Length: 261
Image (tube, rainbow, N blue to C red; front, side):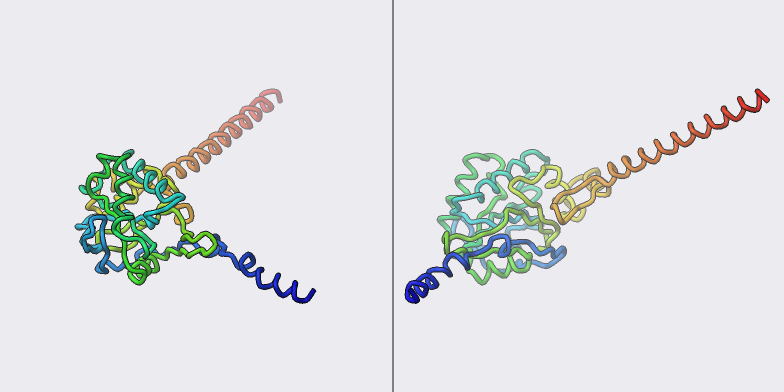
C-alpha cells in the first residue's frame, strides 16, 4: 500500500504544479519607459534590423505574438488590421506595425509565413509598414521586460501563455499606451497614435480631440471626458430647473393664500 502511495505522489506534481496562466501572464503598467531600440532582430526577409530602424521616426504598434500560433495570435493581428482600416492613419506613412515574436525558437520562416497570411487578407493595408521580427531569448526578454509584458512557457501544452495586447510606442521608443484585447476600437487606435506621435501624427483636430478623452490603463480604452462632463452638467441643469419650478410653485401658492385672506 505504501508503495502505491509513493507512485501516486510521483505522478501528482504534473497535475498539481501545472502553469496557472492567470498568474504567469499580465502587463505591469510602465508608461513612459524606454524600450531598447538598438537590439538586433531579424525581419521576415532574414535581414538584421532594430526597432529604431523600423520606426523611421514614426510611432510603433508592437504586438507580442507567436508567429506559428495555433490559437489567437492570428486573430489578434487581424483584429489590429481591421482597426487600422477603420481609421485614417496608414502604416508606412504614419506609423509602423511590428508583429514581435516572443518565441526564440521561431525564425525567419515562421515570421514570413505569418506575414504572408496577414497580407492575403489585408493586401493593401499590410503592403508596407508592417514587419514580423524574431530574435534571441535575451533580446526578446529585454524588450518585453521593459514593457512590463509577462508571459511564460507551459510544459503541459508546449506553448507560451501570453495576453492579447498591442503596445503603442513613441518614435523615440518610449511606451505610450497599451491597447488590450483581440481587436482594439478604431477610435482608441487613432487617439493612441496621435498621442504617441507627440504632435507629429494627426491633424490639429486629432490633437484637440485628445483633450476631450481620458485614457484608462485598466481597460486600455479612451473614455470621453466631455461626454461625462455633459452628462454631469445635464444632470445638474435638470436639478436646477426642477428647483426653480418648485420655488415658483411655492411662491404661487403663497400668493394664492394671501389673496384669500
